Structure formats: structure tokens, C-alpha cells
Image (cartoon, rainbow, N blue to C red):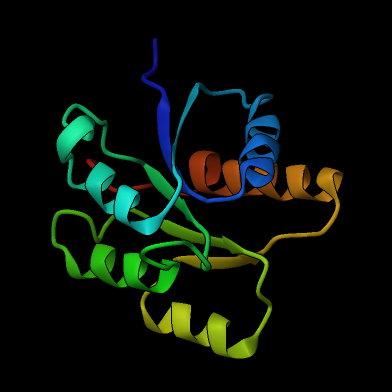
Length: 144
């Protein structure tokens, strides 16, 4: 049996978390979705600190831009600066379509930037597309 794909979703909006779960439910491969509600919690998860000591290394990070305590920009900068974490693909999944945000996240080495659609069905479609591309089409490095 294949091991499940681990995704860390860094998102403070419970509705978006639910829509992501719905979008992943029909995945043809096993997906284990962990959720961090803010950037500080995300970094604790990634560094396996405190209650996250046994957390699996994510194969993919879905990162919101606007988060409490530590925003997505800060999380992305820390992830990409850390030799232990930098190979994990980071998909920015956010409501901002501002050019400055898009350019800024790519400058921090985001692997891609996706603007959240307004409708629930469209959101599920986007999540499924992210899943299909990043977890079935793309060849990821071992240990990423």
C-alpha cells in the first residue's frame, strides 16, 4: 500500500479548510491534510516542535497570505531559507490578486500562486486542480 501524501494547509478560515477537504475527498491517492491556523503554528509543525514532535514532513504546503501572528510572507521566507524545508513545494492559496502580493511571493520563491475563487464549487475545482498537478503530475524530490 502506498503511503499517504501529507499536505500542510496554513489557513485561518475554517470555511476554506472545509472546502479544501471537500476538494480533496475524491482524490485517487490517500491524502493526509494537517491544518495550522496561523504562521507560528505552521512553523512549529514544520520544525516538529512541542505537540508536533511526531508530525510527518509535508509533501506540499498550501499557504494563505493573510494570517494571524505570522503572515504567509514570513512563513514562506522562513521555509525557503531553511535547508531542511526549502525543497517542500509551497502553493500560495489566497484571496489577494494584487500584483504586489503575487510578485512578492514569487520573489520569496513560492512555487505557485493561486487566487481563491469566490464560489464554493469553483474553490473545490481549484483544490482538485492543485492536487492533480502537484501530487500526480509533478515529480517531487525524495524527502520533500
